[in-house]
Length: 371
Image 1 (cartoon, rainbow, N blue to C red):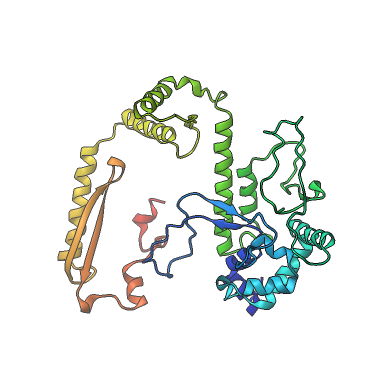
Image 2: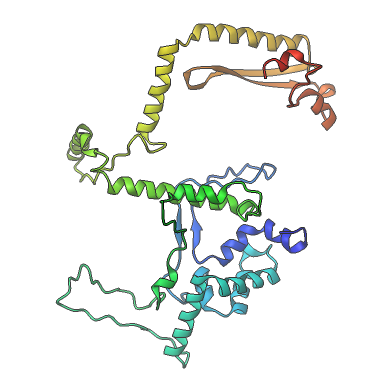
């Protein structure tokens, strides 16, 4: 990635390029505050169910345009026009979009398969008329219909002639196993050579979020399928409580899944961490009275320096609140308003009031003794 116009355009609109060339859409309800301004660093946030969507039809319905995987059934020029006509891609460069579209068709195995399916459709329907059925299914009465269930739709999405071509390209390590979290940690690790994950900008946030959601989903699926090994049957009282509540409310209880304390963020995990923290307090004696007294002296000293000594200027009004974090150490939130003549309006003045640096050994020898 360089400093030319194409590189800057690619980085500025990297998520738009990725979404335009993707075979499935990323969908998740966001929790962005409508009052947020674009001055803070970019951060991708979701709140709710995270999933990927794709169409089951090769061709869009009447009145709709081709999207995502459907675009790979079209010619490259036609697909690029569809992508550029999308309002979300108005900031993308058409020439760069065409180059990336050609790259996907030539190098991506999934895109190649969709192109192959387009040729199959043309061979089966050379006249170009609409084909209602490309494949028929025959019901065999001797087969278990629950297992060999025929599709109810009259269209076909994709035919894969060689399934081996589309195997997952996860790394294969013959001597040891690598967990999904370790694999993503390896991809995101800092390294001296070029790393596309470190240079991806906003798309890096989406990749990390996607990797985390897949890892957490796999862990939850493992817990769901291995309840006997996790000795979930020991929680008999919890099961009895759920059954009694279901009977009282006249509903049918589902299959309970017990999250163990080893699952990060689960109620049992949070309770276990709380108990561990309280055990440290019991052993080493947390003196809340001494902490409160010393903190009160510190607050009085700060208020004296700000209001009486005016180290930051003339304070005409202030509001403060004291909070106790986790019912433990207190901290002060203070909002102070300076008079107009003392308000810092230049960077040099702010740097004189607030800075963060390692203390000078000659000017502050006492502070250096703490390092």
